[in-house]
Amino acid sequence: MDTRINLPQSEMPTKWYNPLPDLPTPLAPPLDPVTQQPLTPDKLEPIFAKALIEQEMSPDRWIAIPEPVLDVYRLFRPTPLVRAKKLEEAIGTKCRIYYKNESVSPAGSHKPNTSIPQVYYNKREGVKRLATETGAGQWGTALSFACSQFDMACTVYMVRVSYEQKPYRKILINTYGGEIFASPSMQTETGRAMLAKDPDCKGSLGLAISEAVEDAATHADTNYTLGSVLNHVILHQTIVGLETEQQLKMIGEKPDYLIGCVGGGSNFGGLVAPFLPRKLAGENITFVAAEPKACPTLTRGSFRYDYGDMARLTPLMKMHTLGHAFMPAPIHAGGLRYHGDAPIVCNLMAEGLVDARAYYQKECFEAAQLFLKTEGFLPAPETSHAILSAIDVAKTAKPGSAIVFLYSGHGMLDLGSYDAYLRGDLTNFELPQEDIDSALSLCPNIGG
Image 1 (cartoon, one colour):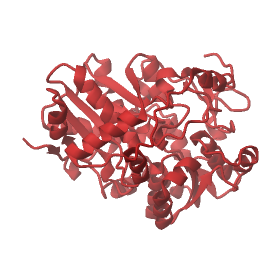
Image 2: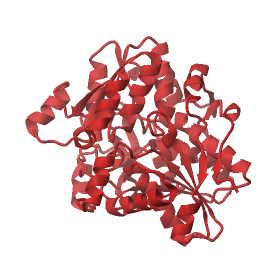
Image 3: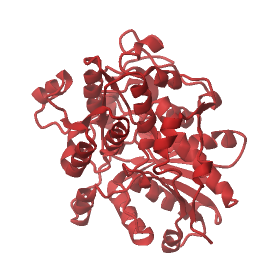
């Protein structure tokens, strides 16, 4: 049988699926960071495109993908769904394992699925420059790529530990025409204040977000973009799950497990959301979210209102959180070091619709190496969590089960991390409960 299931380009989805109308319990509203009252759309207009604000709160189940966005999508979409036969044989499973390969995008990950529309909508509204943060560098790369497609300026604040671990991300972002700063940086008041407090600060995603938001808020020609967490980001990423659904149908397959790694929740949410109506209708599909033990947001975080960034500039969102003041350990899965998760994903988790599992980084790299030896591709450290979870699930799943995981990105710019792994320099780290308790103590006490 064919191991690669290719969807014809003529059948690429032309609409995104919006899960908001289908959530069993409506999302708790975002709150103004100052007044703690429900946020009105006009409060977001200084830093977000109006079209994206509308999508963030849209009640429509389907939203048309603009033709200019489809034109750029066609550079790499649809992406293949692949049967991992050699991996199955290596672990001796009777399950069928498939992976949706998003690493074939120009930026090497799933992130362009949302960077392309975000840049398009901002360009259409006359914005000249976009500012953003990036953890592992996948999002910063994707945004700089999209900005190059629509002739826009791009500024990226990259978490310092990843900036130092992954110098080639900087080169690639610069080559696309973007500028990049290690966060905390001297470019913003937030960054300067942190460096004055701790000159050796390795940064966090929450801190980098604060810098990017401040940049956008203090420059009239600049808007802010986010590569995960927000509703409109998951909306754009549903093209992944929609294609997967069509590809499985092409081979008469129904998924028993859908698996994705989770940092902010964009790739996992984009994969599983289109299957939500089927799950709610009684179909036996298990959504498995894989995260690091060093940043166990879903497995050990508190479901409550919290800020999305360290400087408390962003709206308050109800989500699973480790606390906005959380400073993560410098593990090599930089894209999974965020203190919170997407409200949509957290809503599904709170409803008992998601099975969250946490893993040590060394066992994830071991799974990545097995995948490389069997399937031939080098995964990003973030993606290795989904691979390990798929292997984990296959050990206990009913024989004949169909397991689908999202191969969210390649690891060709993460060779420094693999070098550390091969040298035996990686250590396992499990976040101490006292660190969680300390960070959560600084969260606002808001009911609801």
